[in-house]
Image 1: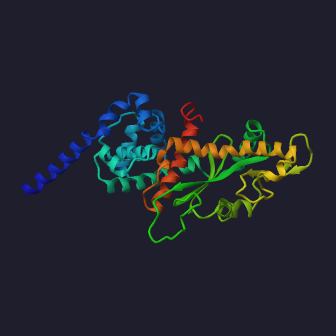
Image 2: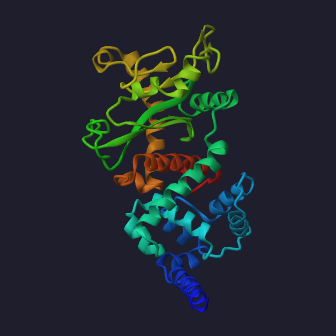
Image 3: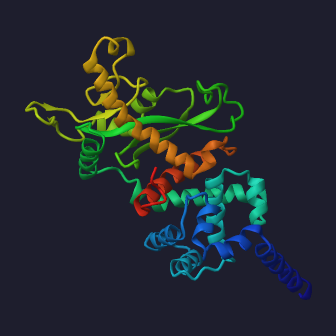
Length: 342
């Protein structure tokens, strides 16, 4: 009995020793009070205020784990105790997303094993999606589409546009026995993040996880959004363009990789534009509106630099990472005013 008690005490002591001697603990203990250092540690992807707001959001979500709720309550009240396991798991994941460092490096900073980091990243990314998606990446309502159209009309001078669409290849470690399914035209293995973005660089719709070899157009046509909204019903009723009386459809704008549809505008071919000044002006206006989605991808990657390196995780975990990053992107665009300007 005595031997068992000594063993238990030893385990607790080693755990405490690892936490208090971790590089991350020494840094964050000060950084939580120094705003600039906190932002730097997470590559501008998270501020103390945003971290606190996130935990306040979690307080209102349906979480059954009493220990997790107590931990979240402490952070929401700014009573941060870095020994709390849940807080450190969140910080480990934020650090991984913000830097793209290897699991060996993250594990060294937080004094945990590589496999532990992998499991923590997946668990926390799933929870980030569950908490943030209903609030910051929910299915757009009619009001959201109308506000998007107003933004494209006023900010980008493209009326009746409700979203900019494009795909981003997210580089991954090639899974075994998959042949060329994930091999894309950029000569690496990837999964595709297809996004529809509003005029303020926030994602309205995301489709994540398609094979890298598939085109943006085919991914869009096989997405649940396409089946439900494009084939099933009209998102917004047609209305006249400014200065006209004939109603025309609302549209998305995309590049040459998409098919020309009544609901999707793409640029005129270069050969046609060279001989027609009006079409050249149209292409310029469309390009200005379409670049919004490219800018959104750029902001996403700059904040969460995990996109700058191959994601060396299982494919399903990589999908969870991308989903969490998209939610955090929208979350920061909604809660921050200075740090997230492009």
